[in-house]
Length: 337
Image (cartoon, rainbow, N blue to C red; front, side):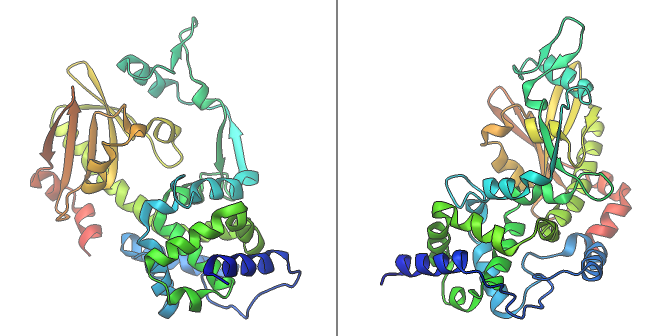
């Protein structure tokens, strides 16, 4: 029997048996009681942006998690493992959907004014409308606010931890420990077929458990908020005026890739901010950011912000001044403490 047939037999057994498997699991990433969840959140808040991917695991579990993490964006891509669609399906019943056109009239007006965003139309009554915002869906927390789990499908670090926990629950860690990243990639590709991976998640997880896999997203959000604040300062220092700034759960960002809208000398610029400059530079190649004029991210040495200005096919680079960094002591204390 070859490896693929063996995997299929194993998955068929897991999916079709009627026993309840807890495997005696007590690892905090597998079974979260309410007090454990609160304690994990408290520790994360104390660590803030210092959480490292796979840090919740140890031993062979961490080794497997690290190898899965090496697969990067392949985990979420449609042509890869397609976890993006899988997570969307898993959370589908938890999402609330509403028409967001009324809420985003101001930024829609700015986007329309650029002449780039053709799907936004100006109606005869002066209001703006786009089909992209008619059915916007989000998972909300117990307070009715945007929940970090909404970003689970786009963060491959959190997806790495989620997949590791799936295999921990299924008793497959020892087997996967013997595989390198390439072999794990083949293994994952095999169990994606016929919706096996989706069914495994449905078998082993409750919807609430997915909310525990947002440590990396939360860390990135904290880091991103700092970088976005410094980017605003840098742009204002260069003579730009801030017109709009989104936040968590902002559909202008999710639908159009826009974090900030700024203006200088009558020209509107759309800004996308990433945690790291390398990611910002790479983002310029993606069609989802085709409307963006300015990309920004923390410089590789961690001492500032690098901005890429894109205009008429040309790209110019600028770096945040030390005087701006020095004026933001809160950032420095949090970044280097």
